[in-house]
Image (cartoon, rainbow, N blue to C red; front, top):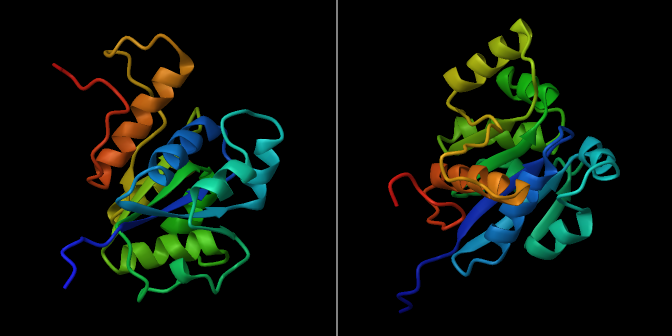
Length: 192
């Protein structure tokens, strides 16, 4: 009988908001771990953002994940509540995705997987990257939180005295992984 614990499955969904640097760090960290299996979902809008900003490209995401799904692949494993995982991260999370998740719309794999994650009581972390926030955005974020999602805005900290943009992004990525109880050393913690 094997005493080896099973790998933690983590779903990383990338939508069309700015902030691909965060998703890139998460993909690198999760994809390199022996105790994690990364499953990624990418939206068409994220592919468009990849043409305009650095931080993540589809080939890298594919190389770090056990599987990479299109948002159109509604029959992929993360769409089912019987497919268990440690948690799902939507990073960056567009306001259109926040709205769809908050209202329980399952019109693509990202939204369906998030809905399933919430209904099954698994951890869902939404990382919105938008400013300023309208009343509609705030209401949708509140509705997602009330449904059980963790809202972790892409707001980097500065107490660790970041020297580079990469340092700021790694700090946020580490905080995201903390939400899924995945130990990491991506940033210097307060008081350490």
